[in-house]
Image (tube, rainbow, N blue to C red; front, side, top):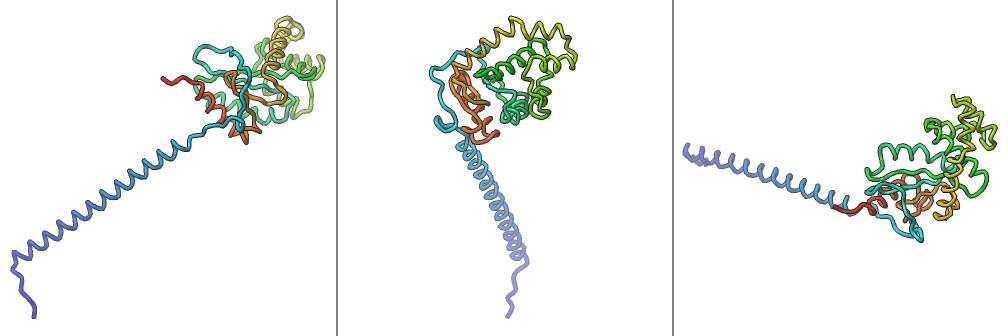
Length: 239
């Protein structure tokens, strides 16, 4: 037999059910928000714990003794030792340029140092410093392509002169720079740094006169820049 419920009581029961439904919905929303917040915190914690820390003997080796740097106070020097005819250096060059423009820490300063362990390398070091002295840094990508793509080794004074004069440098200006005291002095300094850095292969990177690394130690070209950035951070005083 159906039981009759007073109208007022029915209304109260319906209201209570609506209230309970609202509270349940609010509880579910609250739990979802709490779970989301917890997930964000766990993700942040995981990211922080996953911060890359290069290991000595794996990703880099210590330079002993450490060498003085030649950058302004507050800067961390990143030296890349290269050779124009080194295929690995050629492949790394675009990524190094991109890192220098957009990827390097603000307090990192890239310094390029040509390798000098034999006469061929010294000739290419002379090409590099002649380019710098003439203020023709825009020719740097062309020098890389000339040697590595076009097969012009730029290994004689005549070939080097032709390269520069065909790109708007007068013969007199080239000869004055190429055989001049300023370039001779830079090559002598480069030889001294190569000895102190104990350079035997290219490309090699020295961070702040203390850490030596390369693509092989880092694991890949991309990983190399992670190693460099982490070592720069290590050398950056905390404020």
